[in-house]
Image 1 (cartoon, rainbow, N blue to C red):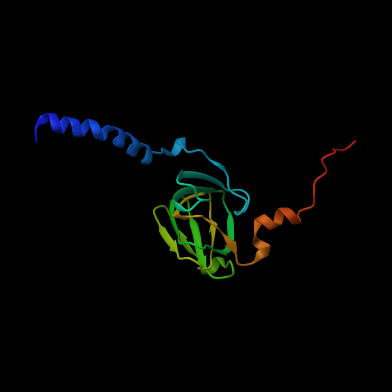
Image 2: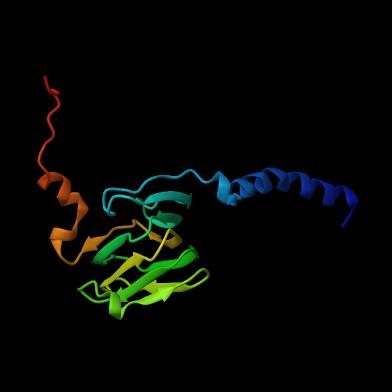
Length: 165
C-alpha cells in the first residue's frame, strides 16, 4: 500500500478508536462510585456498577461491598450469576435453607457460577467485596417471601413524621 493510503486509513479509524476507548473504560478501585444497594438486597451493602446497566438487558458487571456478617438469604435468579471475590471471605451454599455448616468459604480470587434458577445463599465472614457479572436484567427472587427485603419495608411500622412535643 502507498503511504498516503495507509495514512488515510489511520485517520479514518481515529473516530472509531476514540469511541472504542469509551466502551472500554478503566476503573481504579479508589475511583468507584459506591451507593446503597438496591432494595432487593438486604440493607447494609453498597454497590458500584463497573459497566452496563444491571436493570436492563445486556451484559453488566458490578461490585458489592458487604459488612461483616452480611447475609443474603436463599434465592434464585432468572439468569446465570458469576461471582468473583475481590477481598474478604464470601461463604456460599446451595439449597432453600441458609445453613452455615453446608457453605463453602471463598477467598480473594475465588469464582462461583450459579446457573439460572439454582437456589443459593451467601454470607460474609468479615468485610467483603465481590464482583458480579452477568446478562441483565439482574433480578433476585427469595425462596422464602418473608426474606425479601422489599416486603419488609411494607411490614415495618410507619414512623411519625410530626415529631414529639
